[in-house]
Length: 303
Length: 259
Figure 1 (cartoon, each protein chain N blue to C red):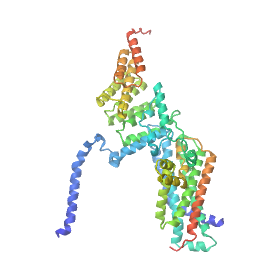
Figure 2 (figure 1 turned 180 degrees about the vertical axis):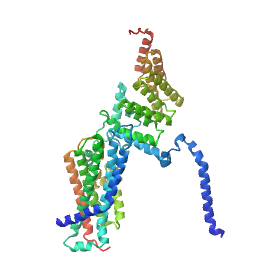
Figure 3 (figure 1 turned 90 degrees about the vertical axis):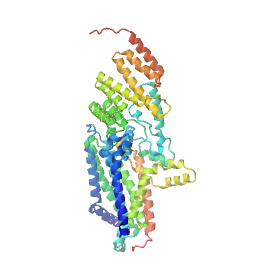
Figure 4 (figure 1 turned 90 degrees about the horizontal axis):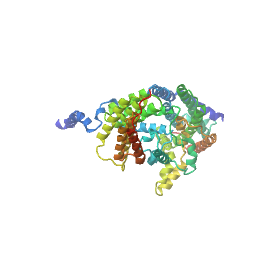
């Protein structure tokens, strides 16, 4: 009697053990990951950790659209863009020409045709490296960024890239702000989102005091995240210093526009002390100029 | 020729009597319309993602229709023993193969016209542009590609024992060629001998079906493909179609008809 029922008893015991472990681990599992706050949402329940893989795929899809369909496949991995800066950067200084040249070189992954099949096949897919721009076609990358953010709300790039295109190219400032705030709710310590919000308030809303507060908060968050000395030797260090440069330059520009030249010079000096700029000579010249302006007494307003 | 056309007519009638096409078309339309109803940042001019989804569904549906229809043609005639009265008439085995191929190919062409008409209506309603030339090239090249696929599946149907095995193997081969065909030479160059030579041989032997997938050109608003390239690609597809049909006939002409 006992022998006959023993497998069922073992099965029952195992089921009870499974259930007990599940209830015990269920409450503890979310604390094992930094992304604990999102563990209970619908996407997590449906996809689990695979949602980040899908989010990454959709973000890449946005990058494919940004390049007009000309994009390296998995067989040309080394040509894939390493970061998302090329999707938002405004190339204003001479250093940017170098970056653009490097990007162009990296994206020349096709090279010369290797055989007649390759040569003839190039009639049927995109073979020209272009970037989206003009005529509002930039809007086409937005659905993929929206879907990517839904799948992985902790991916900060998604919010900053989408907000940049929304406010700077499509004139959708309200939507950009809403999306950034959504990103900030999911990532309250993100200096990148705070920086983008600060720029939005300064460049679009022309609200200087709120922009200053947001940029200073971005700086605080950045400092809290990067307490030690950073070097440009590794990708993470380079990215962090690039962000520091962006925040400091924006703060300096804001203070300069408001006539606070000494404060603007102080921000730029911080940039030099951290060795965060690729053009220290230009920054030194700007600091000298700002200090000279600070010493010059202000002319009374004619009006 | 009349015998071939009569056989083809029967296959076309079979397509609209069966539910496959209707189910796939309704699914494509439903998914596209649901995706089209999504609101992204209050911008109703965004259209490329919709074209991409719709074209992907069209490709999947067309492949399923082509493989599903072609895989069961000869085996079902043999199983139901209708092949005996068919070949008792003045119809040769070559007529049967060409007729079945033509029927499947024309049926796929009709399905593609319906799918592309739907795509043109959906994208035109959004962006108010009608790139008829682009859609015609895409439809034509996809139809040529399906010709090769149907011929391959017909060959498989006289080689493999069951239609399900044939359909599965052919789908894997076709999807493999579509995904990897273009990159096989790059992979070959990175391999040592003899893998390099083997991969390069496969690269030159396989039909490069990926040429006929011009979805990216439509999605990203690229210009028209040169008509000479379209013509040469069509000839390339015709050559492979002919090769597979000949292989089918070579196997089928000596094959016992009773299951």
